[in-house]
Length: 335
Ligand SMILES: [Ca+2]
Ligand SMILES: [Ca+2]
Ligand SMILES: [Ca+2]
Image (cartoon, rainbow, N blue to C red; front, side):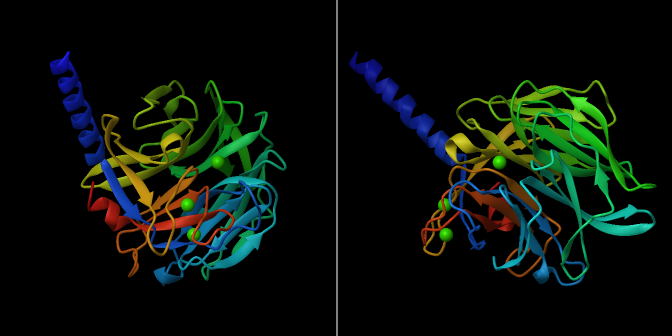
């Protein structure tokens, strides 16, 4: 008995050590102003990179009851667009549409159950794209959202609060957004990301894990990473792509353990998990929701890009929810 207990203890300690070794602990370098609402309101971030002065780039963040914020890289609110219950937002810059390069911002809007489009002017002002109209979703309730540019098509992926997802495509002639395909997902799905190079579409089914579909391949449908209640604990939320040392990685928002497990996409193998801990200046991230990774940005504080994260509870000082910014270099150094 004694030997067994000792062995168990050794196994337990070894398991703890192994688990610790897989954690990349970082602190937030900046946080945005708090959103204007009590309770759960901040939801999903994205990043827009200024064409000539990267220091003037913007963090975009949805206020899921009211609209869209933009913030400067110091976290100061710049703009609020009161356009309805925007849930998730995404950006694609310099998209060739109607012979013009456009910086496109789009979001899922639960007020009209459709996609809402914007464009960003070169100086960083976001304007509603009022001429563009999107077909109303056939889903019970639109929820998550992501953009892609695949084979010169501007595509939109909308996920459903009751499961399933839809792919839409921008039609240049009449500036409409039309549905081209419905994807089957058994239950509530939100986070998603498109790999523009491959046309792969990754979607998080909150209770189950991560699905991969492909824009060109109608038969593609595979659950590639399942919830394991170790690295990945429900709800599975935001997704983001990350390139590192020639590998394409997927960063996942694992709400159940407030961690961000990172997977290698060539074989869907788990690598490490990021956690954002408290520092003297900024509180850490818990109850994690939407995320964004941008590696095009290069500034003094963010030389290799930025990781932006929704934070469920904003302390230091106690305030409404906000978004945290982390210098991506600190994560890459430990991967
Ligand atoms: Ca959310
Ligand atoms: Ca926090
Ligand atoms: Ca804070």
